[in-house]
Length: 238
Image (cartoon, rainbow, N blue to C red; front, top):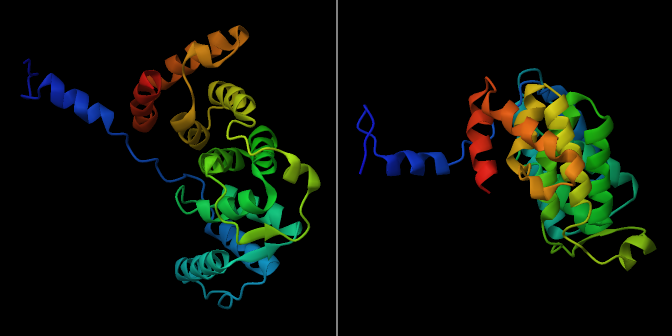
């Protein structure tokens, strides 16, 4: 068994590399913007939340609003079509890559996987850098199984109902779009948000994108950000 100059064994080093660093907080997060999204979701789904917070109390208000919405979705809601865009925007603007699930999941169950993923793909392609980063973080939850049957659309879309729930829907389009975005967009939050779910194998893409895969790996391995450098090693092994 070999050790380095600090006494660390090769096995210990390999084990450390297998533990992925948590996704860092967004650098461009606007609490006011997300607060507006929360208020809009509460309004469109008809959930009562506390009055607008006093200056300095936004964090507590956001927490109370999240709890109220979570309880409403848990007990069941019928969502108007207007709720779709509001839920997706809240998921994109949510600074927490775990809590944004509470907006993605009801949208999935009420409106279908294809519509949710199409909307996130639009944000990735045409949104601001902050929206692109948020869409990448929200995309993770778009793979959830459709189990919240108590959340439904007020006016079901016949086309969505006729479609099979294919977990792979739009995956190829998303992977190709995120690969190109990672290579060509230098925004730190965008690259941090994309890389955890970005396939970095040539076999995942058509031949014309193989050079982009190589470029993405090279960019990530030489990037000044520790998270991106760390994460690329997980991606090339997966």
